[in-house]
Length: 136
Length: 136
Image (cartoon, rainbow over all chains, first blue to last red; front, side):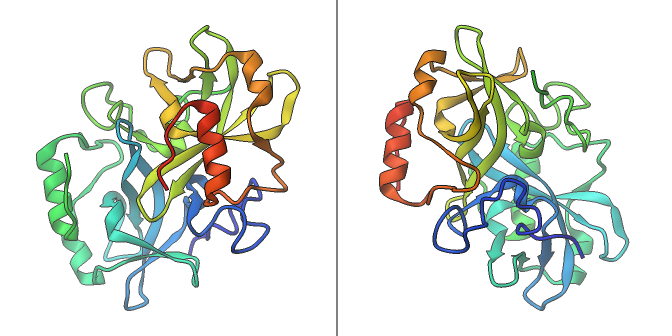
């Protein structure tokens, strides 16, 4: 298991507790790096390695995940559309509603060969897999 | 001076160069942490400490900056609306179009007392200072 945003609160933004300061409406990107990702069956899928920012719109387009513990997917990285992830503030982790077995077919890549993420065909493939909508 | 995203490319996403892979259309949030921020006069203002994600929309609401080298503003942190920052991919740094002297009046906070960033009055004050539009 990895870490949660509370353990990575380097700047002390969550220290005052819920209701004041950042979180859960606004969260620090750096504090969410390394955060665990589970599915709705409570299975640990992996953790967050990076967030990809669409610079023109300022939207988080993808989280880059490792599914290290899942079915021998340890070497690869996976871009998961932001909309497919939900923050579970009770368990301090992300939820990704994909069965573990289905992840074997997830579109992944080698860290040495990052996909061209602004390519429409690549993006459409990723969004189709996770059931999210791609907006160019 | 701090670092640029190229020196923080831990996962190798920019290694293939421009045109393929991420950047400059899609950039890694973690790679942009610590990045230098200059104004349009070429003055070094500070660096990026964190990005605040609006979790509901997936938008980057603010970058949290330190203006350490500016007019004794070393202790404080400053939330700067994402729209006020522009990535300069030639110099590998952000541009923030604020004169150095004006930063003395920027709304800042102590890291031990983070503002309630979903508060409309606080957000309006910050956006007014940087000349950006606040959308609740």
